Figure (cartoon, one colour):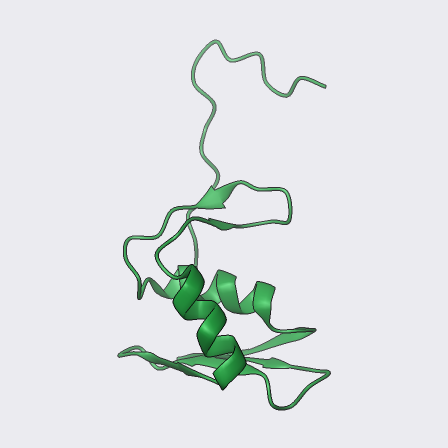
Length: 94
């Protein structure tokens, strides 16, 4: 179970109980609009492709982006680790 609350606006929150999620009305609309769609894991990517509309990690990413000055309590879901580069890849190119 985890909960994201705003440090700036006590009316903004998102909570996942393990069997479902609830949120304030504004955050709920954002989640319903974005759930099930790829979400950026950092401001510039990579993106996480959810396994479904109620994917806990996807909900977590949406909440962290939608709630101003987010603060997490509980144990948030873990996401995928870094993807190894294929053999022969040149690595980072600037």
